[in-house]
Length: 396
Image (tube, rainbow, N blue to C red):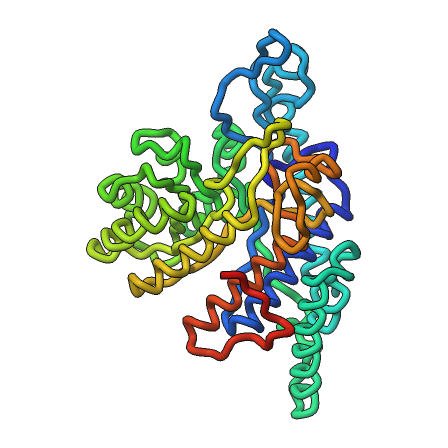
């Protein structure tokens, strides 16, 4: 989902289009890669952003950094950059509306697999990725017709509804604490602001309040790690966040860049295997590949994102471990924020539709291209033949 949700971009169509891309990606990986996919949207709460610098200076004027719409405002004025706790209430209201929209789309007929051709976004429809998706959708349609012919009811909830979960970074602790509730039956505490929460690279210190908060809730959790993480630090983090070693409870979200990942991830996997820890390994191939152009645009090169994702699959194949997921900053909008991919966005072309409030996002076409890459990687791991050439267009 979005790098950071914003108040000004909120509307039903924006939520719908991101949901559509996630549905398409799920279909590509499920059918193309022969793997069940759990769909989690970085939505309905992803407002706050950690910043590398506390202040921002423009034309000699220094003000506090913009930290997300639930903390302060983007406009470069002293009034806008002042922390405003009432913005958390506005973020809660928008999150509640987003959840209602997602419930309607996931269970009200929009997610019915018989409508899979309608999930294609208008601006992707006539592109190479749109064509590849249509060809794969035609194969799924053929399979559905076969199932109907042998008496399987494809109108059942398994075909017409989808389980869709939400997640965001556990960053603004006053917001998370206010939404934490005790289960009256089990006595376990849950943060009801999201299905899943993760702790970021900047707030995962072993003595941090964020790790302490997460250790006390029953939600599925994640933690971002970079090449700075040591084996001992990772094991201590796992033991803090998942002391009972519950399978599926904790995801390790890796963000390193391709070369550093190949150098550092094997020893971390080896440490987890040696200690018998149960984790889900997830690739975040975007955060380690951010750069700034000469014109001042923050961007990510699609080739670098693809290279890190490929390295993630390669390392897990070498280590005998399972690549369990991918975490992307992306949108269903036709933005020009990341360069490369089959869309061919250049540094000069970024200005055409660069609208992000924080970090650059993959657009729908680039996201589908990655989904086909993941499907091919899963097929190879399962010993399945490659996708037909009309559907597969992998780069080295």
